[in-house]
Length: 77
Image (cartoon, rainbow, N blue to C red; front, side, top):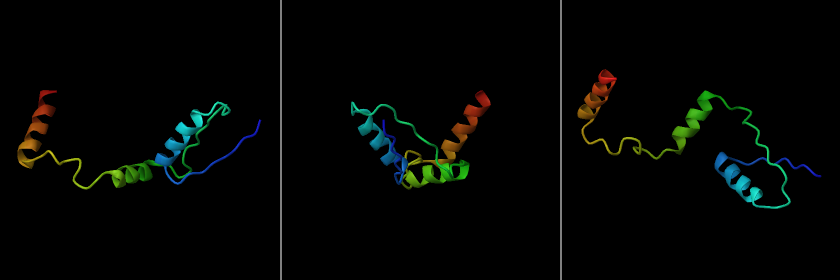
């Protein structure tokens, strides 16, 4: 048996490569190592960098009304 260690540039490509490898009969095992620099800040930064600008709040037409509804939900809980 031979072991290979592969480094890819981002998680998206890692997932793609993992799917490809899983479909090969001769691949016996796939192990994933966490990022060396993985911490809360880098994970959040990566998450927000992947979001398109204004995507999260695109459906909010009236911010004041939206905020009031959010507050009302918290009071009802």
